[in-house]
Length: 234
Image (tube, rainbow, N blue to C red):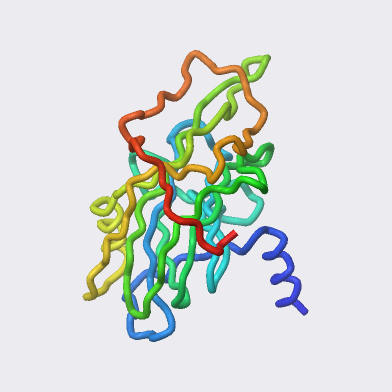
């Protein structure tokens, strides 16, 4: 009964959080699983209660986040793995098969930025192979600060997520926590994670921008958005 209740809760939450592999030696002898490494990060600053979430579909479904709560619903979060942003390195052991990053959201206790149901982001496909360790890149969310009518700071908007190659930074952290003699395949992209139909973008309630709005690093934005063929992942 307890397992059934936990399963139902996971389904209601659009998939459970996919936890990291336990730190230590990495076992790549399992013929039914592979290892996926990717980081999720967001703008540093006052965004204390904001977390960025990436949703994964495939043989194992769930989500990963830029930060985890130490205790569920406590709003007390783990420290950032990075000095230049708030984020987390995710090291996942997944059953072999075809997967896709299918959606993302940015949320807090009070709001949620996401896409509409009829216009989801373009799926980012990848494959998990037995015994292989693959790095998919860093998914970064640029948060834009604003303030409400009485001057209280808040999240005014976000840029489209950027997937970029932070292999050296992320694998240095990986090597501090895990031990393996196997090579790590770098399959990172360098793209803006755009929508299938950009008109379908849905924003949260816009706030009045403040004087100290967080600048957007335009140099990180590639010229071409990701336009790979859509898969069966919805």
